[in-house]
Length: 71
Image (tube, rainbow, N blue to C red; front, side, top):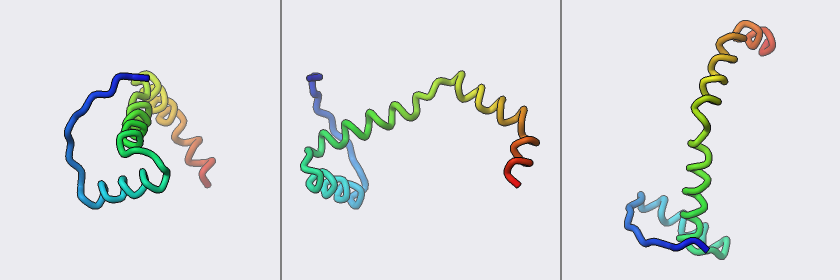
């Protein structure tokens, strides 16, 4: 198991209450839920810059085709 390290942070009171309810309802610790959420967030935002660039290029190159397909 990874070494856990304490840190302090702040959340909107309503968001924190919802997070605590979720943790209780899923029989998990608040720390576990936050850790999983942060890991998922980091995985999502780490999309390779080359992939993003290629996606934009493909969309730009095929804009007219995509418009026709959308009709």
